[in-house]
Image: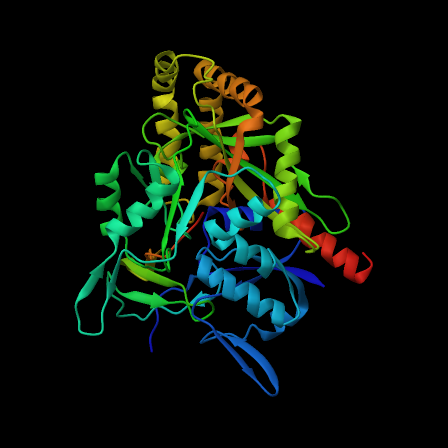
Length: 397
Length: 61
C-alpha cells in the first residue's frame, strides 16, 4: 500500500512534496483532480481523464495527500476519496472546518480558545426581490455590527477568502457602509457578513504548524512563521509582507495543540497551519520608527527573494530555481536587520503570549517557499510521515 | 496526424502529441491529467510549451 498526491495543477509546494518523497525513497502516485470524470454506479466507480484511467492508481493507494488548491474542489476531493475507502490528509472534517473562518472560530470559542471579537450577520447587503428591484440592508447590518463591536476599526472579511483578498478595514461608519455596499455573495463568502473587531497586533502575526501522526499526540512545531510589515493592517505574505522564523513560548504551543485537537478531534492523522494574532495593544516593546528603519534595510534582500519567487522558470527548472531561492533567503536571513526584527517579535510574543488570539486554520498550507526556508519546517516531511503512520497503523507497518 | 517532437506534461509526465501545424498561442490539453499548455514557440521540429495560468476561485491559503 502506498501514498498518493492529488491536485489540480502543481505549484512549488507539490513539486517540493514530490522531491522530498523521492529523497525519502517514497513513491508517490499522482492523481489529477480537474479534467477527470468520477463515475459512481452500481458496479463501483471509475476515475478517468480523457486519456488515462486512474481507478487502479486509486485502488493501490491507501492514503492520499489532498493538495487541491481550490478549497471547494479540495472539499469534494476529500469527500469522494473518503467514500472510496481512502484515508485523506486532511480528512473531510478538518477540510470542512478549515474551509470557513466562522466555523473555525466557533470550534475555538467552544473550547475556550481566545479569538478576535467576531460578529456574524446572516443577511446579505442587498437582496433581489420578486418584482426585480433590490432591498438594501447596509444600514441595518451596520447597526447590528456596531451594536456589538462599536463604530470604529471593524474588519469585514469573506468567510472562505484567502491571501487577504477582500478583507477590508472600516475605520468609521461611512467606510463600513461603503464596504457593505460592495460585498456580494460569492464563492468565498456564500451568505451573510463576517465582521471582527480589529486586533491591535502591532506589526506582525503568526502562522503556527501543528501535526498529528497516527498513534501519537499532536505536535506543535517550535518555530512559527511571523508575517510582518507596517504597510497594511493585513499581514499576508501575498501582500508583500516580510517573513521571520520565530521561536514560540511553551504556552502558545500548548494552545496551538488544543486548536489542533479541537479541529482534528478523532481523526488519526492531520496537519493544520493556524493563523494567530497577538493583541499587543499599547504593550509595545519598542518604537515603530526604528523598526521601520530595520525593515527598510531588508527591502533589497527581500526584493531579491521576491524576484526569484516570481520567475516563470520555477516549474520548468525546479531544482535550479529552488537552489537560487534558498540562496536568496539565506542572504536575507543573514542580515543584521533580520535578526533585530526577529528578536523584537520574539520578545513581544513572549511578553504578550497570554493575549494570543487564534482566528484561522489552513488545511492545505503553502510552505515550500517561506515556511520551509524561514521557519525551517519542510511540511512535506510531516505530511509524508502522517501518511506513513496511517499505513503502518492499518497494515501493521 | 503528423506530429512534432514529443513534449512531456510537467504535472503527470504524460507524452503530448503536438500537431505539426501547431501555432504559437494554440492551447493543448494533456490527455493524462487535463493540464492546459500554451504553445509558446515552434522552431524546426521542436516546440516550447508553457502551462496556462487559470484564475482560480480561491487558490492557495
